[in-house]
Length: 95
Image (cartoon, rainbow, N blue to C red; front, top):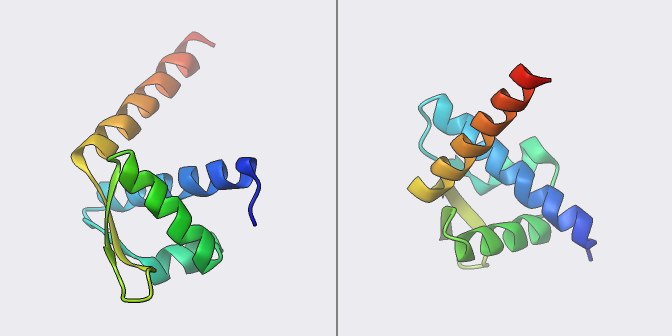
């Protein structure tokens, strides 16, 4: 079972991958591609997606085996990622 630190990192990695896909005009990413690109175990990817759905940041089309088939950032997810990007840019210009 993943530690709290690992779970937070997995969720962040999923959000970052989806945000990058959105910037490349790809509305969603398959669960298989996320698993492959991020090197996440299937169980941990499913747990991360479940958490992010609960936060309203992603939408997931689930397979019958409760694994993500397609994962997409919601409007709220995009807004959160843009806000974080703006904060980083402000910090970089100040520092």
